[in-house]
Structures are given as C-alpha cells and as structure tokens.
Image 1 (cartoon, rainbow, N blue to C red):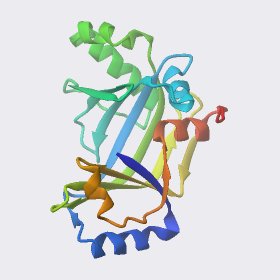
Image 2: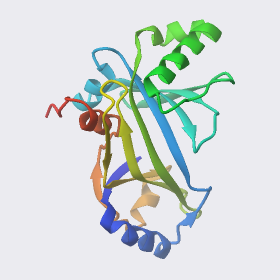
Image 3: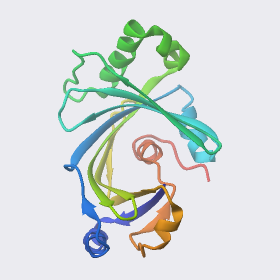
Image 4: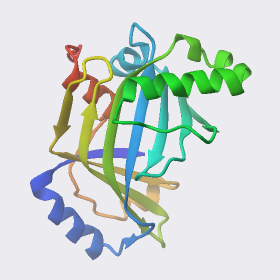
Length: 212
C-alpha cells in the first residue's frame, strides 16, 4: 500500500489521470465515519509517530447514516498486518454527535456481550479520543489488479476537547498485489506520505504536536 497527499486544488487532475489510465469507478461513493480509541497516554498515537514496528489502531466504523457499527482492531508487527472486526449489537445509536458518550457506550456494550474479546484486547484501558469522517471514492484497474481509494472532505472532532477541525488535503491510497504491475502505471497523483488520519486529527484538535 502506498499513500499520497493531494491538495484539493489538484483533485481534477487526479480524476483526469485515472480516467486516462483506464481506472474504473467501483462501488458507490460513501461517507466513512470513525471513532478512534486509545489509552490515557495515547500509546497508539505515539507509536505511530515514532514509527515503532509494533502498533495497533482501534476504531468503531459506520457508513453514511447507517446504524450498523463495527469495531475494528488493526495490528502491525514488523511486516505482518492483521485486522479483527466485531459487529456490534443492534440498538446502539449515536445521538447529537456526542462522540464521547457513544464511544463509552460502545465499550460498555462489548464488555457486556463479549467480555472475553473486551479483556483480550485491553479495551478496559481505552477511551474515545477522536472522531473523523470523510467522503471516499473507489477506483480499480481490472487488468493490473490495482485498487485506489480517494478520501476527501476530512473532518475531525475531539471527544476530549470538543474542538473540530478539517483539512484541505485529499488522501489517496494505492493497493496492489504485484509491485511490478504498479511500475507499468505512470501515477503522478500527489506526494508520497505516511499520512495517518488519526494522528492528523489529534494534532489538529488537541494540544499535541508532532514529535519530530
């Protein structure tokens, strides 16, 4: 996977290039919503910023205005990436954009309905630390099996400070199975980056600053 940052004013050039390179739109574009969880020392944030090889990211995700929520735990250890998903029980509902209360309700629901999962993943040590939402578009090159997502209109809200923020950057992620295939496509769609939505959101909505 390769990430790129593309300024908003250059997005039309990206659309033009993808069309010229025969990428096809797949899936219906949608709004992706997340609430991220971290511990009181923000370990997930700092291990990401430090580039530590062993790290994890925990979030609850839902699409558009649907009330189907999924908890996702993404772990990275050296070059091995794993992802565990847990569909949350029906009846959960986000009210009045109270992300702090909703995040706490999510954790309480998991503790009640799946205590083994709750304690195995140290969810008893987690609190909601960031909400974000963005509009995602999907593209695919059928001959080379290259998948691209384009995320724009990134917005952030902190359950800690209640501050909100946004960014003009568009985030493009390129996923592929064969690196040789990627070399056959002259992609010029932005600046390569290790951009983290979670880290960016925390920096914009709290007093945390980059540590490098």
